[in-house]
Figure (cartoon, rainbow, N blue to C red):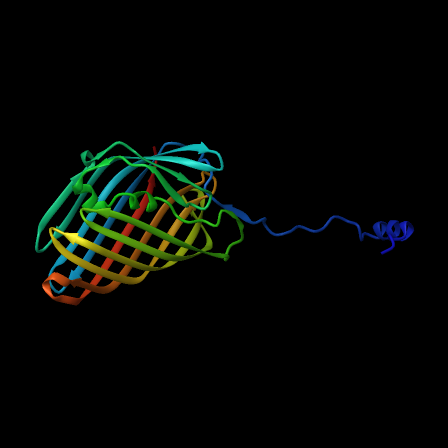
Length: 276
C-alpha cells in the first residue's frame, strides 16, 4: 500500500481530522490479589452447617478472629494466618458434642496465593482432633480467599473457576468441588470507600468416605450456593463475603446394611474485614 499523500494529510489535519480523539469511557479495572496497602489485617468469620439424616442430626458452628499477614513472594503472595480467637462446636444427636477454641491451633497456617486467589498451603499449624472435627484443616485457608479474574475487566464481565479441596481427618476423607461463576455486578460505597460488588453462583459436590469410630460410611452430596463479595480495589483486600447454600444426597452404612439414607444440608458463611 502506498503512503498517504503528505499534502492531503496536512490538509486533513488543518480541517480537524487529526484532532485528538474525544473522551473515552473508564479503563477496565483490575481485580487481582496484589500486596495490600495494610498488613497484617484482621477478619472475623462465622460459619454454620446443619446436616439432617433419618438416623441423626449433625450441627456445626464456629466463630473466629483471624489475623492475616501478607508478604511478597515473587509473582505470588505469601500469606500467614493466625487464629487469635476461635469458638466452635460439632454436635451429633447420636454422639454428643465436640468443642474447640484457639488453644487447639498451635502455630500459623502459611500459604501462597496468586493473583486470582488460588491457594497453595505450604505449612500447617498443629491442630487438635477437636479443631479438625469442627473446622477441618487445609480447607480453612481456601475459605479465606475469593477467586478473581486476575486481570483488568469491565463491569458485567463474568469468569469461571473450579475449586477443589481434599483432606483426611479421623479416618474420614472428604473431597469437595465447586464450579464457581462470578460477575463484577457493580460498585457500592461503604464508609466513603468505593467497593466492587462480586456476585457468585456455585455448583457444589461433597463426597465423604472412610470409617468413623469403626463404622464404614459413604456420603455423597450436591447442591448450589450463592455468594456476595465486597472487594476494595484501593487496598487490594476482601472486605466482606456472605454465602449460603443447600445440599442434598445420600448416606450409606454398608456394615449396618443401610444404603441410600436421605441427607439434607444447609450452610451459611460470613467473612468480614475488621480494622487492625
